[in-house]
Image: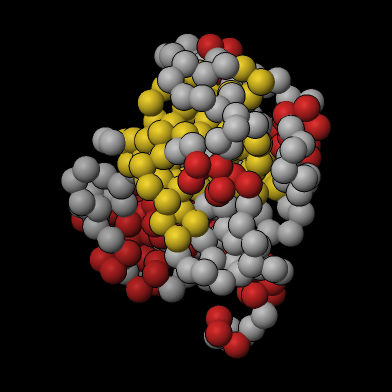
Length: 286
């Protein structure tokens, strides 16, 4: 399938984009209008983009169906402050309620059963039930267009951060299994960012790894090893010494290439990546 964004209906294009780019963190944004009326609404066009200065950006986009703007966008233009509250599994249903397009006079905190907490440095309220709350000043609002579906990038700087001590690990950092964040996918789909959903990927070596291109062809083109397996092998600092390979080769003479690749795959899955590469290298002169 090939999609030209200019030749597809905006709602359908949005679904393709949102279904492809995820999971997306959710900003539960609390704002005030110039009369001091609170508003609370979630946005999954959101992320962090820098720490010095701190930069959070979310986008209350123009509505695709009628090209109107959202209360949050209008509020930050009137009162350039916002509290961004993180969304956890424990409050995801209440968060979804706040996306209801209530009339201007309705307080979404009350509709969703969430508790308003006074902030320290900004006027909008915090959400008590959220374990991390970012009090922010709005530095600028970047309007990407004036048609339905266009984004309005609200560029924020954190002026105060509140973190619930109960979500910290024994090193004083945020524990993903305690904070229990959720992410937004396409359609009605969400995902959990804790428990069995979490896995580790080691960062590339500070000294440069050998790269996939330096692996022998039978490894690169293996039907058994995956792209992730190749990534782990390619992150090793060097190919094994021939002497080390020769020692292992003596014990593998009776095994086929397929058998050795399956053994190497098992070693990689067990975390023995260097041992797996030595085993695979025995095939060069098998």
